[in-house]
Image (cartoon, rainbow, N blue to C red; front, side, top):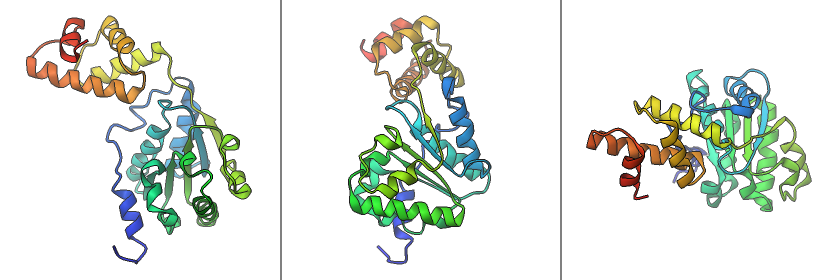
Length: 236
């Protein structure tokens, strides 16, 4: 690995983005303001710093990745850093990021209590501010609820707007599942969507994975996605 400062960034870039993690595929429900603010940061208008928090499945990771896709559409350079995957590579990953237009740091709770990471993130905040680089941060709890030991970093995390993303209720999940099915050319009835929802993991990424499985099976079998077909395909 070279020591020219580019290797850590290239390593982080190798994490990649989900193709379907776009703003167009995000169903906002009560999270509309958070989506609008995130789009603004991605495009370089409005707020510069944004902090999103919510439980697993609320859509924080989706919005951060969507921001990177949108930034690219506007010719802006961005980087998505999911810390649960990258923490072991060390805080050196944060060096030189102020040269980008947008930095998205996901699951910041993963480095809470780690002095080296906390100090590196604190200094990154300062460099991004000086460079005018946009920053999106996501975690599973509010900034003041994170077990951050470095007081200055705890303060930085609350610099910009803070949004608590709410998990979709069952009606909204059915609507999202049907919309995603429609995009795949699947006519998914209310009954079939509810059947899937009540027998599968509740997180949207898990539901979408099941839908993809059903789509492939229905194309292969040349059958519609009905409740009997769902039962036979998924073994329910």
